[in-house]
Image 1 (tube, rainbow, N blue to C red):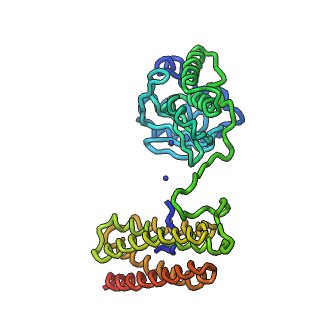
Image 2: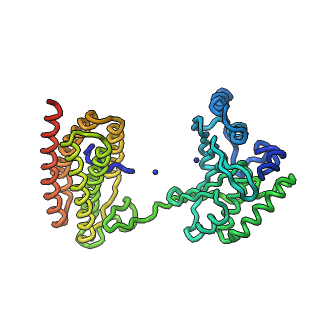
Image 3: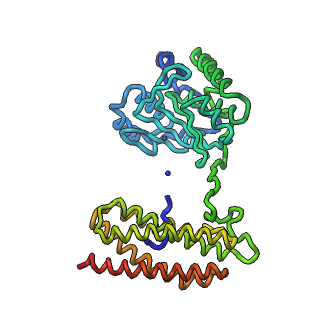
Length: 383
């Protein structure tokens, strides 16, 4: 059970190179810094360590990596496969990868460098952005848009034209044409503004967590409708439902992890039973919330329990076989004991709706039964 918590569940070049790959003529280090930003460089020893990691990279990604190192200093993340900078210039993230991906727009070159900014893309513009450039990536939930090419200047160009599409200034075809025109001007050394700096400010609060579609799903505290929707219910019942759902989610996720292991048949059967029982109980709890007009609330307290549970399950994941089985059963004994205590000392006192109180009593009986079986299995594993 892992403290009856919900275990929450998710990356320029010189003229000769530019003429070869279809990207800008001047080096990125020669370009002006993007508007409102100053690169922050770390010490040369750090950059030296990074250069050792990329010593055997292909020439083009190596060039891009060294350009970003020269401009922004050592990255916050560095492996033999990719370098990642966070919060440099106007960017949320810069990623340079060893892997090269062929890309023929606006002319054949290789993609290996991505720049990401905070930006909320209107849902009705997503198709146009995909038609504009296949190397544009949209993450609506995180509120991000990324451009991937082989030069920072061309990623800036990609983002500027993506903004024009998102704001209705250009169609996808108009943006594609403008991209090619800007590249030609860049190759000629004219430094078009769309290539040298972002022409807009990234969104300050772009994240879009979307909305639940499963009836009875919880809502984050503070969201509209996160508490009672009928006059007879209040935030107490909403949080109680939130805790019950967290218990079920916890059991489901822990049992699903147990199903990946080669366990003692009795423990495997117990985990499967918990998965099915708590899955059905979660569905029933959400239906109850709909019936009584209360939306489960994910309060700060509920979320803290989820975070703690995720950490405790993470400690089990590296274990294998019988070692995992023993630790899993120990966690079930501890967790179920705590759930019984939570129902008795907290949830029953806070629940006001009669149907919810009855649901809690049935929940306690089921959890107590699960606890007794876990204790039996625990005793057997210690023989």
